[in-house]
Image 1 (tube, rainbow, N blue to C red):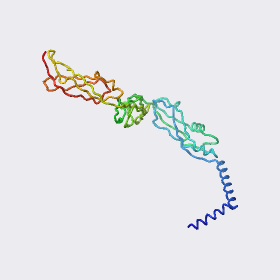
Image 2 (cartoon, rainbow, N blue to C red):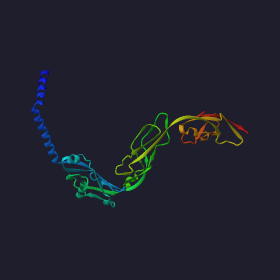
Image 3 (cartoon, rainbow, N blue to C red):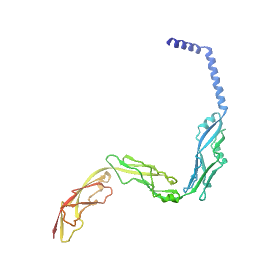
Image 4 (cartoon, rainbow, N blue to C red):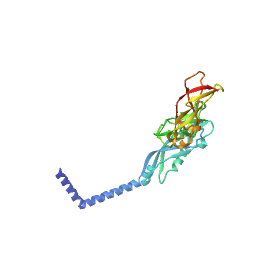
Length: 321
């Protein structure tokens, strides 16, 4: 095998150093030039799918029969322009606002309308050979409007040592929905697409799409979602206990102990803002004699969570004045 390769390689080197090699390379170069001249002077055709967009539809109208969203376009071009037009991204946009009126109707784009729109995008010597479909049709109807609230669908889990500062905030809180009267009667709210978030820290903002409803148009079709989380810590305070109602003004109620310790979770940013004034500890005298009274806590600060009280019950003694 080695001898065969050596013999072949020796023959190739001998050919490359001969006049025959130069003649061969000259013919290859000439053939390449002839091919390029032919390629750049020959007109070629190609077919592409062009996306079609319709603008000018009022918010309270809806297509009941969608016009075609694409146009099959055949274009002829030559030379370098052919490769340019082949790679060009075409897109057709039609303003249909002047065709929308009344309760219902039809949008019609004639061949001349399509030719004019395509011609505006052709460059150089490019020419349009044909297009399909030759006309664009779409039926529309007027829709009724209703504003409904948006509901976030999902769960939010803060990161370790973080807690949520209130519920997720949606903006806008309401969106407009368009549809028939019968359809809108059944819609009380719209939901976002199901989305869960894990490990949320600090302030998190994103956009969420709304869950589509068949036969209904929503504007806007997405909303902003804001989630605020903050680091938390525990805090403890001592709160005096009072009796909510005395049986008789001639009696004095003694509590043992007469104060409790409340422990709770609060965001680090609000730690110094919480005081004893944010709590009220009280007991209620029972109709019948009992050994202990449960302690009730009324919290006036909505940022406080995981509230615990110790002790949960106290002893009492009723003394006549």
